[in-house]
Amino acid sequence: MTETTTRRPAAPAAAGAPIRFRPDVEGLRAVAVVLVVLCHAGVPGLAGGYVGVDVFFVVSGFLLTALMLREIGRTGDLSLIGFYARRARRLLPAAAVVLVATLLAGYHWLGYRRGDEIAEDVVWSALFAGNFHLTADGFSPVQHFWSLAVLAQFSLVWPAAVVVLLWLGFRWAIGWWLAAAVVASLAYTILSSGSFSPATRGWELGVGSLLALVATRLDRIPSRVATAMAGTGLALIVVAALSFDAATPSKYAAVLPVLGAVLVLAGRGDSVLGRKPLVALGRLSYSFGLWHWPVLVIAGQAYGGPLPAPSRALLVAAALGLAVITYVCLENPIRRSAHLRRSYVLSLSLAAWLIVAPLAVARWQTSTSPAADPRNGAEYRPRLGALHGRPLDSSHVTGRAAGRDHQLHDRDPAAPARARPARPTDQP
Image (cartoon, rainbow, N blue to C red):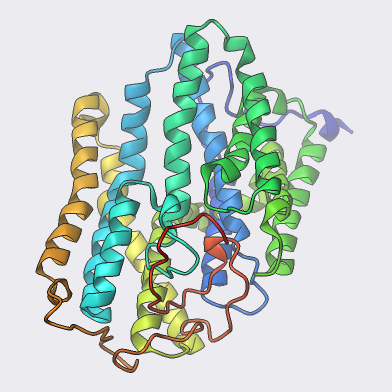
């Protein structure tokens, strides 16, 4: 009987209380990245694993806003420079390494002409504008950077909007303005045909942010009810992953996994998601999510035919190994560096170099590419099994035909070398 009134450990407080480590959040990240990776690897029955991206958006909005509210509660204000410096340390190191490595691997394994196409994609992705450039027909090895671009754009606009509201004396209205923006974004998503715009994905980040605004009230939920909420939320995410496919309308279907993520975060499913293996994988989720797609795509394009299941499994394992190296040697040391944390100038200077690095490598490769000389006539020449000069089939990685592509993360990582559309669109 007493169990129904037991209070859970405090959630991140909107009033500025210290944010305690949430093992369930790391576990939820692990579930999300596993769903996405297995979907892209063509595991049967998980065609809807792309919903992991929707879960990531909710989690990101929740954590970003919780951190902002903690600073506001402690100081009464929000330092935009400090916030942007922290985001740069978190996002840019791994992103820059993956972009450069993908670009060089593309030139080496897929030939100069394809490499030049990838270089163009890398430039847009390095500037966190890939969602405005990449299209469903691109099949780019950096195609997945569209979601990182949406997150970066949200991280740029939302804190600035909060600062403006604080400056105008409308701190009390932050939640109301955010709720209105979420409703507007969701309505626009249903009415529009685009999937890559921040306007059609902002509501997912906004929902997580709204949850952070009421974080202190979540502790009042009885323990038994909270456990049921978390279990129900996890079940909704799994149901979406198992039942969705490439033909599922993306306009409103994302409501199901988003609702599931909200219930998990509100219920704090530590008993299930707080397990050490899930927490460890959750910490690697960012790097793992960045590495798996280019590894699968480049291998599939270079091979020139459907990759067998054992090969895909080895590629996923290789991507996880790269994620471990990136996290241990680069991502975590930079994020936790005492020198960088003490100096916003140093952090932002490093950020500038990390953005410039992929741009410089892309410029160097395209300027020295034989395909840059029209007299050379360089062909699309994969280094492995594909026929020279012949576009690849649409199922080289997973061995299954790609359905209607209404979301970039729905695609099989099979990459035909198709011509660029005259004008990039934001349509499925």
